[in-house]
Image (cartoon, rainbow, N blue to C red; front, side, top):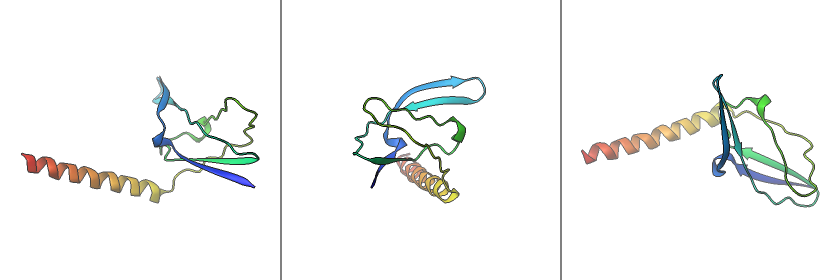
Amino acid sequence: MTTTIELKATQSKVHAVTVFQADRAEVSRLFKIDLKSGQNEVEISQLPTVLDEDSIRVDGVGGNAIISDVIYHPPTSNDSDKKHEEAVKEMQKEKSILEQEL
């Protein structure tokens, strides 16, 4: 039996950032999870849309867990479009409130 643990990248604090010269940066996030006995599947959503698939690294600290595979599924355009639409709507609301205050 596989236990699935769902996490959102946006709910985790950034642990470290290294900025490189070639328009790249390394962003490290820490997640604390309690694994169950047996196989666990950890899904992390809300990752940046400009993520370089080949740059993903996963490490585990403590315990006897073994990382057997890391699979990246890029977000579908619908996911990105919905997020952008929601952000635009929120900004429009804020703009309207600010304009009323003038």
